[in-house]
Image 1 (spheres, rainbow, N blue to C red):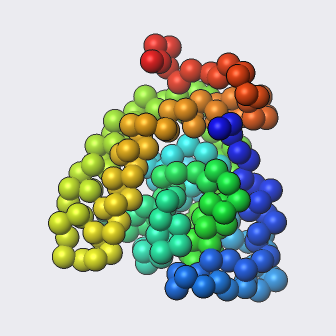
Image 2: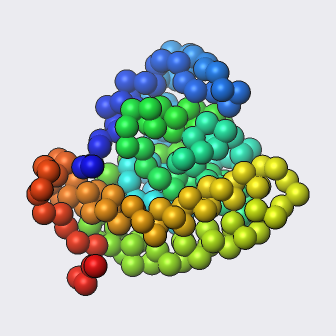
Image 3: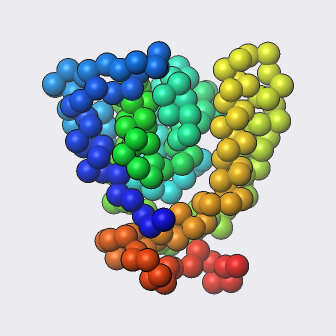
Length: 202
């Protein structure tokens, strides 16, 4: 599967019904259109180091633990404050809508969608080279929260397990497609050679 650009779907969905934490939907007021992402340039510098490379990332979100109620396949919480970050980028319109629904619940407006303007192939490779740090953190979180007395932490432990599994299988190929997107400005065609993440990639 080649890289899928989520931005057209996200922009189109901003004025429509969005997923809500209770499983239903809600309709944002017209003045919210285009304001669900923080335009502050310092958001990139403030991003959580656990965000996976891609257009979306969390940087100083709230700590209300709402994101996984809507987008559990994309949002996870840190174990310092409970702030949210993106551990898997959306790969179709339904996933993008779910992430947008989670974003819209953040009163701190701590999500950003300008990752494509900041990530470079070198930065993506640096992140991948240091992935062991993220994997170790997620594995430790799973060990701790899976035994928690709090139902919310036990649920989030599942997200940590998914992140570990994604790092182990699947993420490398997704990042290679993202490298192509960043370098060429388009998805790779079927069979087209993809950039490597490391000089000795297996």
